[in-house]
Image 1 (tube, one colour):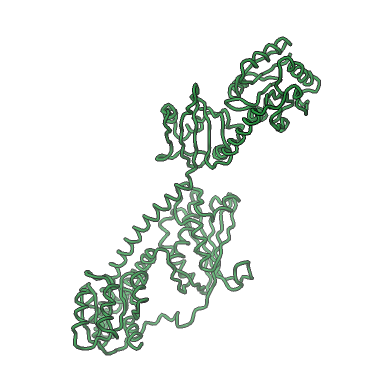
Image 2 (image 1 turned 180 degrees about the vertical axis):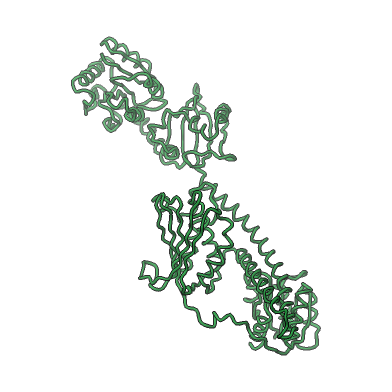
Length: 636
């Protein structure tokens, strides 16, 4: 006696098979579709399974593959019993079947069915009949061929869609999944079909999912737009609708992977937030620089008015140094407000690291120790200070996050002579290594770490490694990474080193040189105007003052003497410097203009320089810097 399961959606065929096999003494159970068969197989282990190919609710081909993936049924004898054997080029062995019988006249089929069972008894579960049996009793039917062609066409469309498509029965069990849906689920198709879609989602949304599926009606509904649904670590959007087919309550689920879209939206929101922050940073830096102009200017004037033997010099110098330090910080704010534009200058890599670390130390846990190894010889690179600060900050923050609990970071700098490497020239390079004893990375993470939008955290934060890579590459350098899981990470940065002329490292302040002529100072801040006027008078210049653009326009048009130069502040209360500049040049064709601003040289200042202005002064400026700039411009 054999234990037999017959799976066919046609009730007449099921009765025929049950009667034939029962009369032969076999125990027979039946199922009218693939899903029902899987339910039967939970409690019944057959010796032989007859399976029709064309069925609703999981067809025969997929049912064969599912059965072959189930360990308890790996030796079951599978027979395809199909009416399309003559119309379809069927490789039943590839499906995992042992035999195939073409459905034909009821008086012809029994001998083939019984022959297959006899072969199974003789050959065992591994017996294989390679030819389709009973095919001589049927003929090709054009209607069946056309229906199969139409079915294959629809399958081709579904198989190539980027959206995931699922068909669910009324209990939300999965009857069909296209390749995109299988990929998004992270499961094999054999494991996905027949499983509960509600149970897949319940881990993320709890019993709310059950209530959600109860609401599915004739109109499509969407889940996952406002609150995230995660499927195999991907954020997805679900559109669910009922099939409008008589007597069926099945549902179609369209799955869209919106992970990249959401990350891009986050990037846009971040960019908008950063735009607001940089605007605010620029405004704050401008106001700070205006205030510092008054402080540094008056300190220099105070020092000039005191005798060389005065006892207050030891108090004035610390104040000047503190003011200049604040000026450096505001310049960093202005650099962040530049919108990512590069302004490379020659900097000391060692000074850069030592000055940048205090700015980011507060963001690193106190349990993390930072060690610095720097050479005695100075290393100079040509780089944008702010861009490099962003790189160092991003890398150190990421390294600190990789350390769980106590740990250490080492920052090592040295110079290396590098041979010719693919896209990089042979020469001397400054080599900066940032080493941590964190959790490290596997090969897959390491290979993808420089991809745009890639992050091991869904939300992500800090400067992305793609941006770090881009900044280093734009500076003519490259990055290499050494990392293993559990063994920490080493990030190696190589940047071309440069030589520095002696005069660039001397640090000597420019000498004060007296001049002659008339200078118009256009400045709306009274205290800055007063300091600038006093400095100019001490340099022997005749000074005219204007607090607005309108006042400046009247002076250049009506003043009877010559005006040699104008110091033009960009931000005036009634008009900006860009609008005032052509008015000055129209009234006084030979007037020279120095642009002055608490903002950086970018933007309006650069626009004025392109239009013909002769120089730029960044507030706060030292007395010597003002003297040197005036000599440079006045002498042409």
